[in-house]
Length: 183
Image (cartoon, rainbow, N blue to C red; front, top):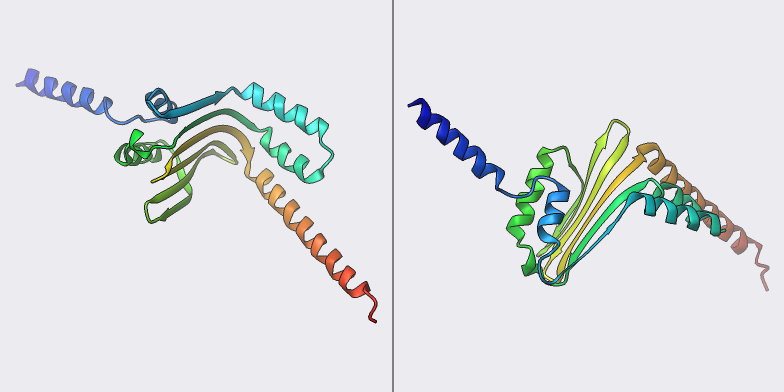
């Protein structure tokens, strides 16, 4: 009886481990070589180096503010397909359920007709460690996985910077309208 119960337990463990991919890396590795799928992987040091070169060569303050945050992005994985049949919706939903159990939370979830846009994050204290963007609709599929070191304060500062800049531009427009002489 013990042997039977141990063998059933072992068999159930083996069958559950063969299910849907549990991490973004496993999902990427599983589906990247399918026909009709385009994939791209960029190492973190290259993202950092490219961001630094771009930051030093740009004079626009808005772009510099965004690049300060973008330089905190590490490894990047991108997978896209123009054919939705390549990665079935059931596999995507199973994968999303699995990664929610590993600490990912929905940041943005939009479902409109047959299109689904899902942005998920996994954070650690005050930093966002992983960002996952998945778009699945009748026209195609996009998977973007980012490893990051972005702090919530940095995102807040960036948003406040652009809001302040927008307010300043509105004030300048009002001043221009008020300065126009009447005929």
